[in-house]
Image (cartoon, rainbow, N blue to C red):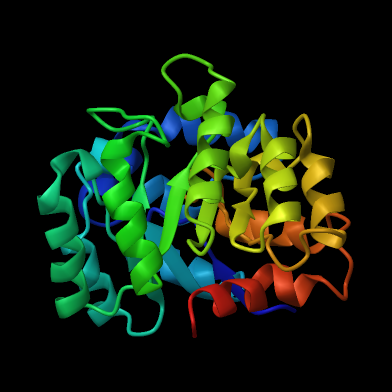
Length: 276
């Protein structure tokens, strides 16, 4: 019905296989919570089955943000782009606490691969840092200068201690780097209204509601925002393997986002951001 770019996927590949080995109970719990099913690829960790599920959900491209906490930094995942040409875009993980080495890593990835952005999880990596920590500013400056997007996974789930000051820190980064495109995975929940307010003031912040846009507390805020002030800044994402890609796609097709907006939500906004 609608072609799609899934902006938050951790496929059954490389170090992400740990999730398929260790998190089956979590997959089942969330499937039950959201009236979904656990798919074949979630159960088995089959990459081929997952690509088939992408096809079934009409997902043309999956964006893979890498995660240092799981040992998935990037290099291995570029094999996906050769195995399935045109189906995966990799956002390698960059840790700015590595100093100059982090900046060299960005250069190395750019020289070797066609990257469109990088992944960072300040609150959820082995050595956490604040969003607005000066240690990260050289990375932000480089990404802004070179036109690369920054994908951050941000929600209370990814904080060691729930801290509402983190959304102010994120806003400071947006203020200090006004040309940097920032993609907020996990929807910024439960501070999503503050992130949406940032989007009202800046066209360069994007939200991926993924699992938080389903039937939980605040989910309708994402729908209303997608239909109005952030219709060009809201991105489809499934958070696979946490959720079944087919069921999640069908949910968002019928969640209340206007039919006139769905092509932007599912594909056009992401395509523009990724410079496709």
